[in-house]
Length: 262
Image 1 (cartoon, rainbow, N blue to C red):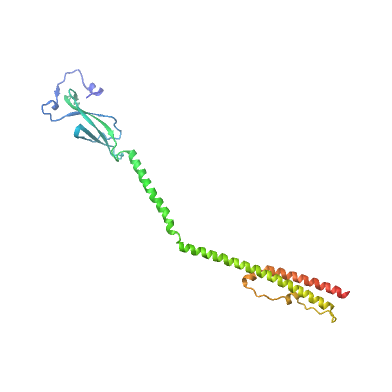
Image 2: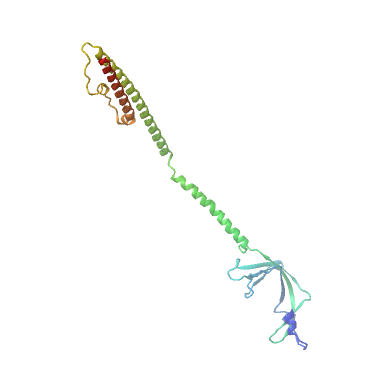
């Protein structure tokens, strides 16, 4: 044992130094020294480890980590070299016995990263798993709307129905315009014929005729049978035409009365 604790236990008394079993001709045990390049704090020092010696003096040491650590074990790999004249002093604190043992070999190992035992590798595997799941999810999102799309046949039917509806609307508008033109021309011709007949009555030898209480434009105007669509489209136009005809008739009546008084 070395260090201040071991030196403090030794006093000035003479002690018996015994040679251990490693000095026998056929030793039943061997002592080795192990040098680590790095020993993590996650190693559980209360548990036993495992040491394996393979071909070519290759050594593998496996030490358990604290429970809950990732990875669960720490693995060291290296090689061993034999000692020629190296010994170790072992002191028993309970009995005060001192024993000298011969060292067999010096083992030098380095910490390695076994597959699945590194935190960084564990995180990388998680990221790779997430990246693997993302394309599959995006493919599902992209393919699901395509199933809900209409077939080409139904799409063409919808377009054809829209075109027919637009054509029907255009036909109704054109029929409304033509009906409006014919009505305005008919009303103007009836007004002209009415005014001519009134002039003839004023200058005829029989004298002026008595006018009925009804307006000429209302009695003489032709009656048109129009569809419900035409009536809806030109209700305002017919009303304005009727109003103008009434005003003109009243004006002509007032002029004829003034002429007869003269």
